Length: 450
Ligand code: S3P
View 1 (cartoon, rainbow, N blue to C red):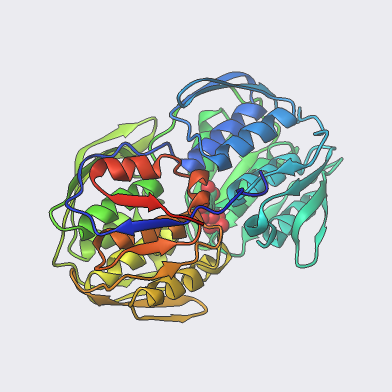
View 2 (view 1 turned 180 degrees about the horizontal axis):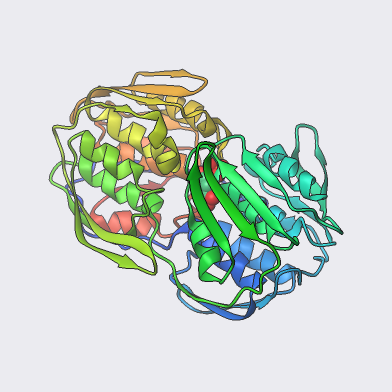
């Protein structure tokens, strides 16, 4: 898990109209949570639509290593026989979370209040990412962490023997940190309170309520105050995972910039804490329509219809929208290159600590393809060249980041000259069917010689 094998260089060429139906995979955030909460319930949880990408498969294996029975029955169909809150066994070996920040951070949270010792590692990207944001709050519960300098993996967590409830204000907008604290709070007597100043994706809260936990959310002066009563018996659930809006972003954005395109992306989860990209695209003048809007499993869902949009204009994306589209800035910066005028993305310093430094990765890759970008610690501005104006012809470094690799493949679909990435292997972490799906719509993506 902790490597991706040989790099897979890929090239995307200017394509004809993209047309057809794009059935994107299940939501990554919800898939991780379904496996983890399933493992902490007593009895059998059934899941359909699970994302079978490397990140989520790593979490499935980790839950087995903690003692849960996790079984695949068919495409996206899984069951988890949970061990109950407080029932985790100590894994016999190191837990390798591969590329998955969400996997490692949520799992650190859920084991931190059990009397077990676990060592975590991951690939070169994950080993460079900060874990202090998790070890600080789990330390308040009584867990201890021993990692490399700067709080990096590999890292050993010694779970708290007599955990204390915690009241914690999350210092940065991070659903991973919020979720880790809530999952740790499950095995603690009394009430754990998590406060977030800005709302981030709320799948953990929704799913905890679904599993029968006593959890309340109040909006107060401090922000969103989430209160969880510890040591519940979680009841197994049947979970239909909606399709991932963060994956839908790629065929949607590709259709908007590729002349003649008309693509339908059905059944996309449109939880308001995730849908900021689509709001922004519509503000830019994208021909993006929500069809068949409905509710499924407590989450808003719609079919997205995206058509070529030659008249898009640059916008300033408001800072308060950042959390609801944090994973979509790379592909937005590609769309921005084909709009008229500049697109300003502000308050986005969290992008610097994702699978790669996404501001740096996008700025360097766009520049290599003839697009001007200004950047600072927490902002990025892309100067649009209009629908026909992006030269392309460059090679971007994916930096072990699936969303960087996919974004540059989208750029190549409408640029004048082909666009390459040095390594598309990480795409398998979140969107293993990206190449056949995009090719099925008419895109021309090739794997080139290493
Ligand atoms: C995620 C939260 C976000 C996001 C990541 C998935 C989650 O990370 O970037 O891809 O499932 O909770 P942060 O919590 O670090 O913002």
